[in-house]
Image (tube, rainbow, N blue to C red):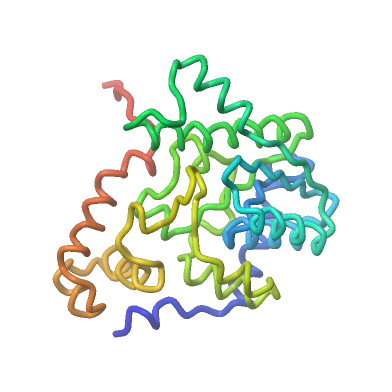
Length: 266
């Protein structure tokens, strides 16, 4: 058994399944369309391309929400994609909104120890903006998360983890890239290194010790096949300590993937 081979899939079948899912979700909700955040990254790029194919360009609204450190190339890629797809866009710069939070909390960008809390404020600010446009237009918010990020908790609870539906959440990052290429997404977008861009220079490697090419086979072995960390380490040549670290991260972030617990009535 090859764990990397398990990432292979039929892109035509995968896209058709997702298109039907998007259409049904919007119709069942009696919504008029969808709103989606455009970051210039591969996840949002694939998700908006699929939504546009499923619903038509007039029913998709893309929102660019850059911060002061957002790379100009990401903004340019998001704008070019929107032009390619023919969808409407709005741009809302989030720095002023986030500064209002920081001022009210009495903190600043330079305060040590609060980089992640401030990063999460940015993610949740973007969620609020998306829901403003969704509510104003009777739209649904389309989430852009993938299975790789979901399994390791690499998202903000009630931030980019907050949406009405997730069209590509069942796909590993490797599969997202391949499906994007199949759909004709420009290579520089489909293969762009992943970065949440929640603080200056933010990269996957800040929190996870593997890139997705090596991480995805580990995740498949652990969570799709239920293999032991030892076996996964042997099959992927990823050190056992790192495999165990991934398992620990999955366990620690379980609360992000489940509804908030409550007392169960007897």
